[in-house]
Amino acid sequence: MSNKTLGQQNIQTQISLKSLIIGLILAALIFALCYFLIFVKNKDNVETKADPNAAQSVTAKSNDYSPTLHNNIAKVGEIKEVNKINGDLLAWTVIVNGEPQIIFTTKDESVVITGNAFDSNSMDSISLPLLQAAQQKFAGGQALASQGQVTPQGSVDFAEIVGEWKGENPPAIAMLSKLKGAKEGKGSDADTLYILYDPRCPNCHDAYRATRKYVEKGFSIKWIPTVLLKQSEDGYKLGAATLKDPTLLGKAFSKDTTGLPEASAEDKKAIDENQAFLVEAFKQSVGGNTIAVPSAFYLNKKTGQPKMTTGVSDNSILEMIFGKI
Image (cartoon, rainbow, N blue to C red; front, side, top):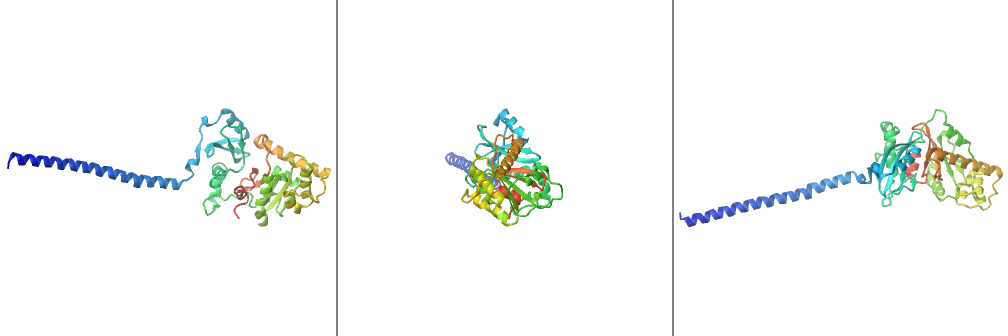
């Protein structure tokens, strides 16, 4: 064989080796790309589907709030957790009178918010899952789960007012039972939800409408009037009418004073005493800087302690009190 022929074979061998190497490299790159597109992306999708709210609540750091704000919230109760949630809000889990409560603060620390909070896009409750988690961590929620009181969706159906009570009523419940108001239902003092309201308050009107289905199912609610928004003859007249005739609740919540008698001095005194109770309750629980209506009080059968809550126009709060119906 000639030297020329050998040279050509060597060149062809080198080209073949280079082609093989290039082919292997390309194959490896294609495999890596496919792996990324198929496996990594799928993994991300699975993780997202498994916990769609994971990014909505993360533990806050100490530099996310000022020492002054922390000290002020600590005056309300024992701080257990602070979480950052959507909307640049901080959600504080605070133990108040032995019960977990969720308190929200704004980014500029100028506003403290209590009650239920919703995602503006889905209108799902943000505060209720936090409260349920706090109940399980800090208020015996694990005992509830062990008793099998779990909804089909897997969330705890608290129904805090539901159940038999054989103990003595706490002083707060005894006092609420003596305040003048209009009672719906025939439940005992321990089985009654007490709602302090102002008949001119739009949120109170919403709470009245939202509770109709529970009254129809036999639950008891006592509506205790105040004139928290502002003392006026109309406010006293609307509140006093229900003290004399509970069937006038619907009329009072429509702010219709037609045909209603003027409130007597005794009626006004009773309504002022109701309001004094509400002011004192807020002073003891959250410092008294903000007083809200409607505010609800009841005996939490799960803990045996009286509980105060706002946001009773929201179905999620009512479900926490009465359970799902």
